Structure formats: structure tokens, C-alpha cells
Amino acid sequence: MISVLGLPLARAKELLAAKCAVITITEARSKKGVPGGSDARVIRQTQTGEAACTLVYSVFRIEPEEPEAQQ
Image 1 (cartoon, rainbow, N blue to C red):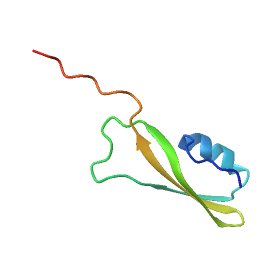
Image 2: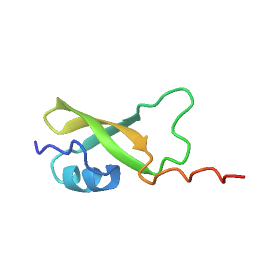
Image 3: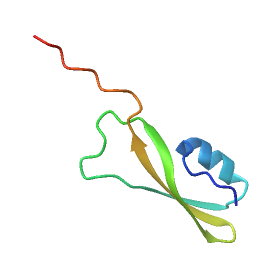
Image 4: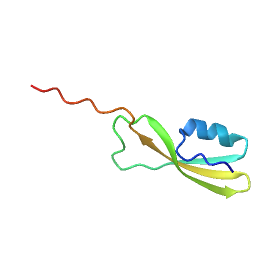
């Protein structure tokens, strides 16, 4: 099976669609989540059967925070 670690979740699903009949997707996050997060990336990939796999993804913020306006 090809490795999709670090790839955007949507692209990972596209690449694995031909290899895995069943793709299970789970999110890993903190209780608060990531404010402003917009980039879902695969952080774990496990083959769970001959034609099945599980992807764990997390959402990252890829844009820097705006500095607070100084008074």
C-alpha cells in the first residue's frame, strides 16, 4: 500500500480509493481544537485488512495569526 502520511486528507482518499475498498477516517484533536485550522493532514495510516485501511488526520493552521493591533 502506498504511504499517504502528511498529505491533505482529500488527496490521500483519492490515492487510496483504487487500493482500499474500505477507508475508515478518524480525527485526532485536542479538546479545544485548532482555532483557525483549515488544513486536514494525514498523521497515521494503518492497513486493517487486505483491502481496508484506517486514516487518522488532524487539522492544522497554516496561516500565521494576525498580530494584535497596537494602541
